[in-house]
Length: 454
Image (cartoon, rainbow, N blue to C red; front, side):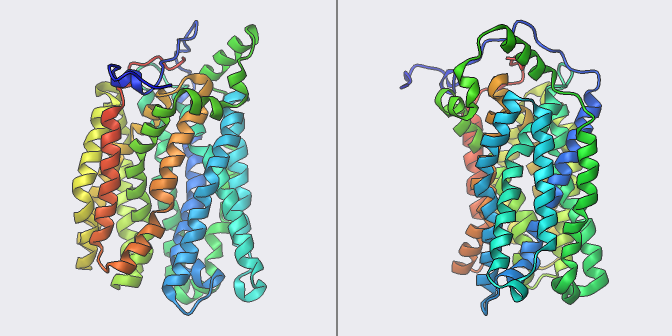
């Protein structure tokens, strides 16, 4: 419906939902739920990070052999992007499950699907053994990984946030949001020693399978943890209300209702997270390939720089989230977005130095600024939508941002560097997307005081 120019920004982004008759005030086992959400998210992102690192190091020649190294890398990164294309299907599938049947049920299913797909990649024959069947199977499993990721993030942060005590929603929602960086660190902790033990040739020939197959143990642990936690009290309250009233038609297809009623919140929420997605994926995926192949930087230098930066981001995530509970989500996220706009070019320009300390320092600053953007984003996106649409809404905004800003970032960066052989183009590209996030955040309202049970 067309909007009157006289409407305020808060009104323009969509209607505010009416509160439930009673608002669940958090759960006594909130810390356990947050820890369980973190464990599951870490495992999912470990699986995803292992694939991203493997695509930068070995999957190109193993599954897409070519006389041109750039072509092989593009093909490998294309399979990386393929998972982002299937993520929206995961939003529809797991968002519907999560909003209708419960957050926990959706999370158990998403983790199981990710485990099957990741272990499957570790067992695949290469092109040399199976011919065209090998890349077809690789892409199929990669699509399944993407479907799983489409439901993981939203469910994990919601389960934690909806159990959170009053005034600590951003803090508890940020706990599973550590999972992406922690998953990357865990993957590096497996890949780096493996590389050092077997060497680059041994890793390329067979040892690249080890990180994928180790996922078996992690998935079993994760499934056990997730099946022992309680369902969200907010979801249970909404479910009780639904049993006493006639179910609304909108509950049957949450995504359709979301697009019809909250399009501006969805689009602006997506934009608010798009810049951070670009910073994350260009740093921990693309640069691991770009640094060694294009600039001659040792592989261990790039992995170490990204790992140290990720660890620094993890270290400040919870303090930043606690600050967001006190000051509001927008001030913290705006600071991070503005910082990333300014720092993006110097961060990637550091690659030209080839100096391990300079690169590590630049990446550390960049990933700490990313933490300012992403620590509050879990609570912020969830607070934009009512309980009956929250799983779908938060997931859709974050996954669209990841797809547009992160999934295609390695492909865009590869093309940009084929036209302009300078790491500066990475900075301008990333900085531009962070500027989009800054503008979207300015257009969105503060949500810290919003009724979460609505």
